[in-house]
Amino acid sequence: MAARNAAVAAQGQWTDPDGIRRPSGEVHGWEPGRNETVCGLSLSRSRLQRFPHVSWADVQPESGRHADEVAVVCRRCAAGLGARRDERRWTRTNPRP
Image 1 (cartoon, one colour):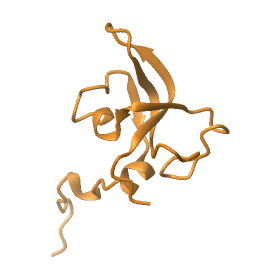
Image 2 (spheres, rainbow, N blue to C red):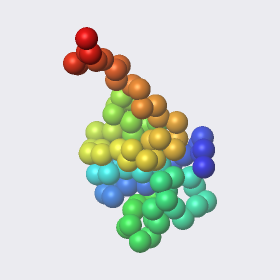
Image 3 (cartoon, rainbow, N blue to C red):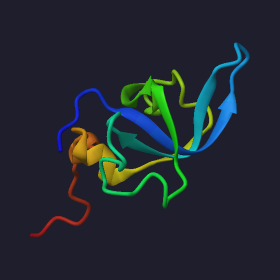
Image 4 (spheres, rainbow, N blue to C red):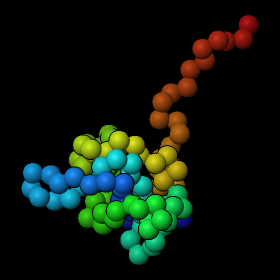
C-alpha cells in the first residue's frame, strides 16, 4: 500500500503550547479511513491513537515540526511510505587485498 497522504497513529500524545494534540512515543503511518497502519498493525488492538491532523512528513526527526516527543519511527511504515535504506553512505571498512 503506497499511501501518499498518510497521517499518523502513535502510542501516546502530548499537548503543545497552543493546545493542539501531538503524537509521542512510537509513531506509525496511517491512512485515514483504514483500521490498520501501513505496516499492518491493528489500531484498536495495538491501542494506537489517531492523529488525522498530523501528516507523516511532520513527525520525521529531520523535519522537526511535530517530532518533539517522538521516540521511535516505525521502520516498516517508513519503508512502506517511501523511505530509502541508503540514507547513510556505504563505506568499506575492511577492504579485500
